[in-house]
Length: 115
Length: 115
View 1 (tube, chains in turn brown, yellow):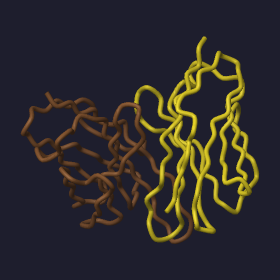
View 2 (cartoon, rainbow over the protein chains, first blue to last red):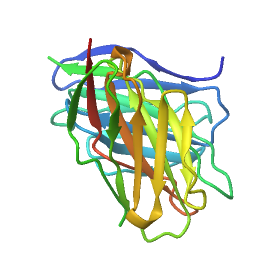
View 3 (tube, rainbow over the protein chains, first blue to last red):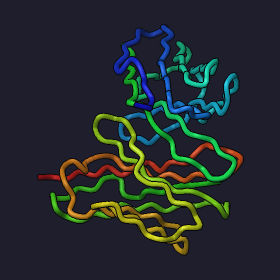
View 4 (cartoon, helix red, strand yellow):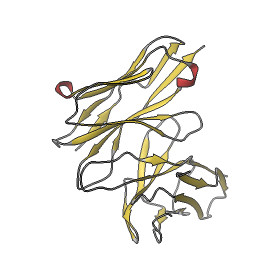
């Protein structure tokens, strides 16, 4: 079945450590996105990518980094520079067409806790 | 700038009640798309519906219905005969056409359905 997978589901990090969250999609979607969600809050965009080897900062990119070496994969690294990384992280993808605008499909999320 | 307002932070109903979730949007685009997503306690956002600005017909899918009114810039979501499984956070989103492919999300409405 086509879809988006994120791993791990739960991640614990010590302060000062970098961690990488995995996101893979087999939907053949062009665009991929990373969002952060804090308890009781909406979604905030961290980074997005519309094509391979290209990505743009979202609203809260500081302390995060990404890569897009393959169409299917868009890993997110939470660096030690991110001062408050404990949150729920959601990866999404969508098709890009010349006309119209398409819905996003989301992965199951990764819950990151800093100890 | 685009904006989506979901003024209801939390709604609590008893099973079998009807409930309407409000969504008001702002955009200068003449062509745009509106979406509703459901986020159950598991965390993954599930796409429910997409509506483009040229199609003002209301839509019904089982117990779900959507009322799109351009005159009031609203895209409201009604659940008829609510069930406990409808308990979730519901997000309304606005997608511009062309140019940026980044949707604007509302802050979400938490729906709690009591048995």
